[in-house]
Length: 208
Image 1 (cartoon, one colour):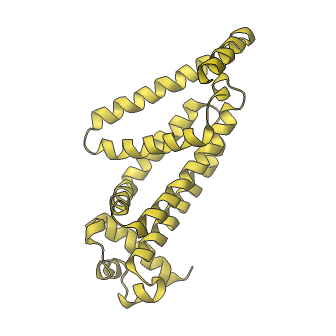
Image 2: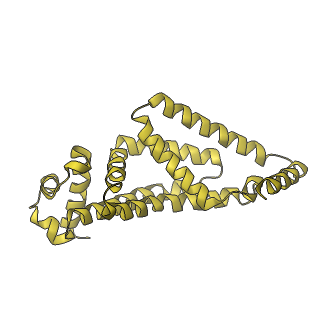
C-alpha cells in the first residue's frame, strides 16, 4: 500500500471518530489525512469505497494483533479473558466508536453493509477456530455448531461494547454472566467418563 493510500485510510478512521459516519466527507477525510481531497477520488473512486477499505484494513490489523493470543487459548475462561482485554483496548483506542458508526451507516447504505459484514467475519473466523479446538473433546461439542456459536459470540461482544456506552453496569453484569457460563463449561469438562457419556446421550436426545 502506498503512503498516500495509508494516510487516507488513517484519515477516514480519524474522521469517523471525530465527526461520526454522517459527518464524514472527502473534505473531512482529507483534512484529517493532511492531503488534498482530490486524492480521495484518485485513489479510491468514492468516499464509500475509501470507508470500505478502511474498515477492512483496520479490522485485519486488529485481528492480526490478537491472533497469537487467541491461538494460545486453552479454555473458555481464557477465551473470555482475551475478550475482556480486547474489549478494553478497542474501547480505549476509539475503535468501538468506529465500529458503531460503520454499523449505523451500513443499515441504510448497502455499499457499506457488505464490507462491514466482511470485516466482522474476520473476527468470527478467528473465534470459530478457537471454539472448534476447545469443543472438540467436550460433551457440549456434541450439539454445538462452532460457526454459529462464533457468530453469536461476536455479536454478543459487539452488542456489549455498544451497550456499555448507555448502561455500564448492565454490561458488567452481562460479562459476569458469560464468566459463569465459562465456569459451567469447565465443570462439564471435568465430569468422569460415565457422567460424560450420560450427558452426551441426554444432549443427543435433546437435539433430536
